[in-house]
Image (tube, rainbow, N blue to C red):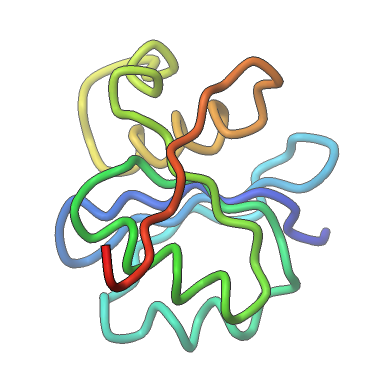
Length: 115
């Protein structure tokens, strides 16, 4: 199965990454160290990545965009309704993966390095 959508939780190190295929099946749900993130994304085909907007999210969005991924930042308050059960990194990544695919989701513009 080919990865089409990724939910990335930047909460702490290690980061939690969840990916789904076009039919909605889970391809993987794993944790990755921050220093290994770019290498990991370079091995993946270009896909849609959803990240909660926070201080470091803009940096990672710029980095992943240069690799070729379509990165979309979402306000945390818009992701929260997609959390199905207790607050863990894996559940947050799942919620981001779900929220980024919604047609009515509002996204935050990625800030440039100068901003």
